Amino acid sequence: MTVISDHELAAKLATDAGRLLLGVREEFAEASTAERKDAGDKRSHDFLMAELARYRPDDAVLSEEGIDDPVRLESRRVWIVDPLDGTREFSELGRDDWAVHVALWESGALIAGAVALPAQDITLATPTVAAPPAMPAAPRVVVSRSRPPAVALEVRKHLDGTLVEMGSAGAKVAAVVQGLADVYVHAGGQYEWDNAAPVAVARAAGLYTARIDGSELEYNRRDPRLPDLIVCRPELADSVLAVTR
Image (cartoon, rainbow, N blue to C red; front, side, top):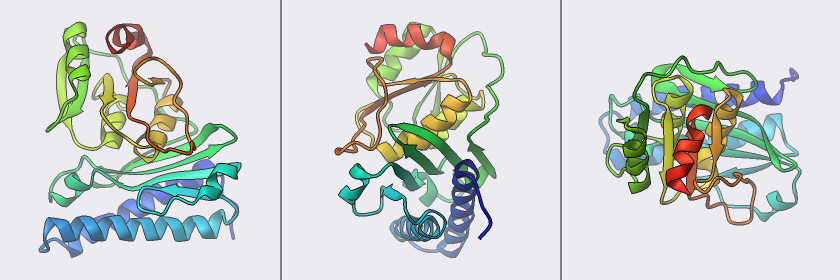
C-alpha cells in the first residue's frame, strides 16, 4: 500500500466520502427525505470505517454514526469523523451547505483535519489552508437559518454586523475560512465530531478557536459533548469574547 500522510489521508477520505454521498443523493432523488438521510449517514460511515481500518488499522475511531468504543480513551491516536454533517441540508436536493468531517487527534491535540463540501466540489484540509481575504467593514456572523442561537445574535449586535444564514457546522466554519463570513458562534449543543475537523482546518488558516468562555477546545474526552464554539478572525476575538463570556 502506498504510504500516505495523515493530512493526505484526512483530505482523501473526506473527499471520497463526499463523492459517495453525491451518488447516494442521486440514487435516492425520488425517495423520501428520511430514506435519503439514512442512506447517506450509513453509507458514508461504513465507507470511512472501512478505509480507516485499511489505512490506519491501529488507530481508534469516534464517529457520530458508530458505537462509542471506550478503547479510544486509552488510544494515542483517534480519528474523529462526522460522515454527514448537515443531514437535513443533504436531504434537500439542491442545497450545498453540508459537509464531511475527518479529523485526527493525537496525544491531546488535533493534528490533521479535512472538511469536504461535496456539492461545492471543495475540500479544505490541513496542514496549509489559505488565510481568508480582507474583511468587509461590517463583520458577517454566520448562523443557522432555522435556529440562530441568542448569543450569536448578541454578537452581531455588538459588532454592528450582518447575519449570513447557512446549514451545517462544517459549512459555517468553511465560510469563515473562505472569507464568506467572519464569525461563527455556537451555543446549545454539539459533539466533538461536529467541530473537530472544522476547528483543525480553521486553526490551519490562522483563525481563532475556543469555547464561548474563551477556554480551550478539548477532544477525545469520555463525554463527547462539546456544546459551544467560537471560530472567528483573530482580530475580532476580543470583541466576540466580550459578549460570549
